[in-house]
Image (cartoon, rainbow, N blue to C red; front, side, top):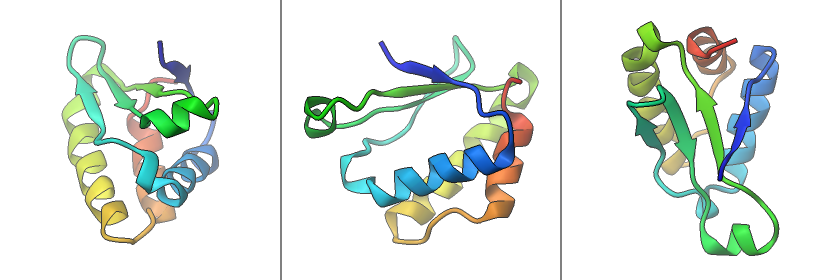
Length: 98
C-alpha cells in the first residue's frame, strides 16, 4: 500500500520532485489512477528492499487532466536529466488536493 502524501506548500512539492530526480534510477513510470484521481509514484524492488515506499498523491478531481499533462512533462524532463523547476512545483501544488 503506498504512502499518501499531502504537501502543505510548493516547497515540499519541489523537495519531492528533487528527491525523485536524485533517485530516478529507482522510480518506475508514474501511474495516473483515474478512479482515485491520484498519481502513484512507484519504486523498484531495490528501493523497497531498503525500506522506501511507493507514494500516492491525490489531485483535485477537476484538475486531474492538467495534473496528468504537467506530470508527464516533468517526468520526461527528469528522465532526460533535467530536474523540475520551482515553477513546475508551484503548478503541481496548485492542482493537488489540500
